[in-house]
Length: 79
Image 1 (cartoon, rainbow, N blue to C red):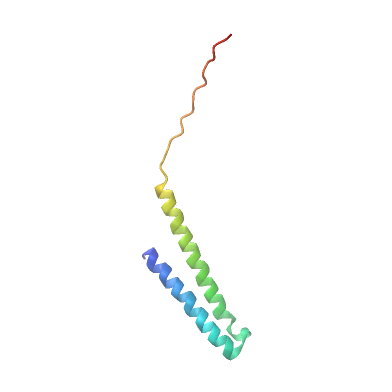
Image 2: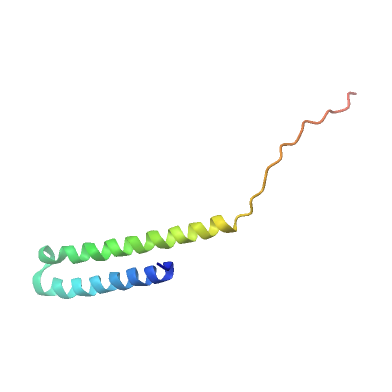
């Protein structure tokens, strides 16, 4: 699945669960509606994880592969 689509869906789920939680919290209280809040937080954390993972893979692709050559020790002139 496209990463932008996945991130958009997760962000929409986060906002949707949060709105439903607010409405349920006003109706029933925290004890009966905490699971909606947990779903909202879980969706937000998953969104952040996927966003950071995608950003990390872009950075790794852009890094040029350089080989570090060890310098040979030079002899110095004796005085």
